[in-house]
Image (cartoon, rainbow, N blue to C red; front, side, top):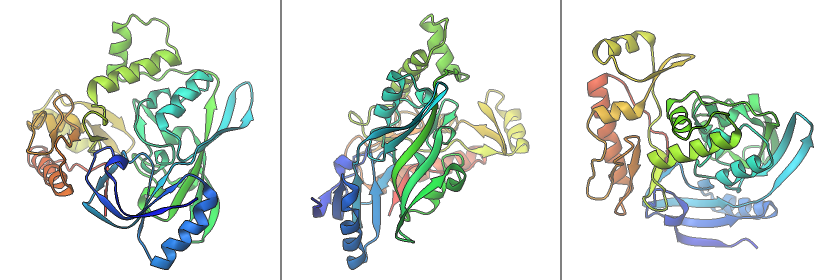
Length: 338
């Protein structure tokens, strides 16, 4: 049964532990309740925020309208062959739980994305990625409810307009309610471990023969060493995207900073935002209620119940310092709402 709450505390529904309150709040665990919920939203003419794990959000102290937490569950095999499997996963499933489930069943491709916080339904929005893999690489289709046409739709991968940490869903907030995601996964393991951090861990452990379990263990270990657990120290993961600059801009920077980390990109050269921020002296710098993590300059932490204003001011100061020193503009990764 659908229950709608007024001025509901959202601290437990966002990994930054922002002390926000929603004007209205509903838990959607059954898609059969969706029509009733949408009727309520339409009658009240409410702006609506649909959330999963809340791992990619920076919330205001008071959130107008309705916040809906999607908690639907289920993993279904749609087709199964010797080479691959097609699975349909409900939006409310935990992302990391899905990765471990696939590994246990010897369905490969997601292991590089282990330990990313959040829900399955949120993964296409941001086109989550890590260590050389993006979720778009494995997505076959995304099932949605289109609030514009008031109908359920199945969107092919090409329809989703995936790009680096971007998608059609992110560019049209509130229009598409992701209900499930279909993944095409291989039964033949192919290692992707070009990142030095992964290879370094594997070498240190004496791993000679690569396996999906070894990659999974490496990703988990490296992420745990670099990124704080949101349950222990509230954060939203990487707070800034790795910027992509022109080859000319990169060459100019390399003249001054020969050691600048860089990675090839289709539209230029990708730089490491964490390195840029670290060079500006931010790593480990704490303000009264928020700060920059001591081991990872990309991560802003909310160590003492900071507000949206606290987070925004710190993020703006970091962006300005990087712009002043490197002439590179950083873009925030988590979604600020509203």
